[in-house]
Length: 273
Image (spheres, helix red, strand yellow):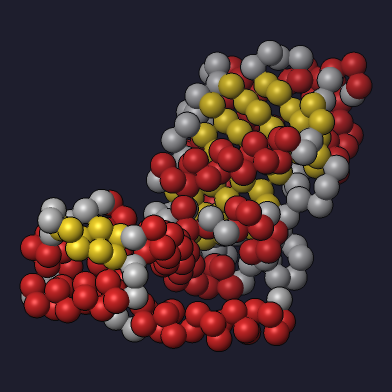
């Protein structure tokens, strides 16, 4: 980016400062993303006086970001695009700030860029943490959350012994299971129990893909929950922290991330094991 990025800021810095220096202006722009609103509606939603709304609207109108019509205020085409980008930025910051220490201590760049750009979609989540007193807490809770899933999709660059019986139980309960595993994990599964692995793969309730890439995330998405594990800054996978969310946005984000990895992997066939 370099100097080109700096020059872009020089061209747009004044408008950026204008918008972000006023909470009322930002809230009005975000509020109008839903459609036309009157000054009274904006006043009640934002919690400010009518005169404050009118003053902010005039300022935004001067910059070509909104226009006043008979039925109320509308975003212009430019205002609509800018509002959308500002909202995305705010959602991203809110997601990262909610558990700042987690994000600061993990390799966030392990998440593919186009999904990292949409990290704000996770939004409502919690971080499960194991401790010296309960080193298996994250794994125990993970199993509890996922064992009743009707559809189970997972991507994993790590081998966990407890994962095998969980998958067997899911299949027994009639769940649809789809897994994307790295070459190393597949090799470990075959090494530990080739016959058992082939039996699992022969079940029509499960499909497994092998990905020959350096995957830096481990995650599961079911019909009701999304679970994400990351590598630490030291390059070692951290099993003691797990991001968990039941939010629809997070589940959708996880499903799309799964499809991304699946599209880059090759389906394992029984005769090739």
